[in-house]
Length: 54
Image (cartoon, rainbow, N blue to C red; front, top):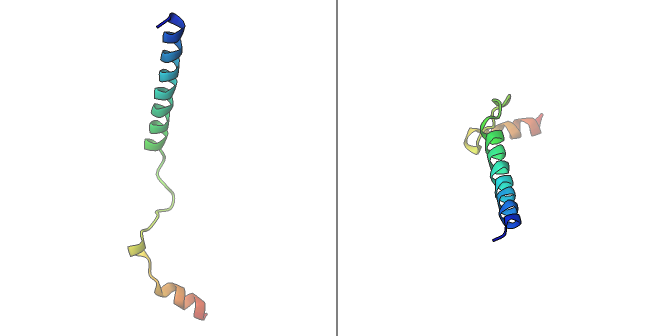
């Protein structure tokens, strides 16, 4: 492989690894959410019925 091939390979692999590390950093260091998202088991379905009747 020529020196140009090595440079292209190192730059492209370095870019992909850098982008992956940046994405991991952004996902893992997000600030705490202001609202907590609740699962389906936390929902009270009867609330919907009460609002529809009012």
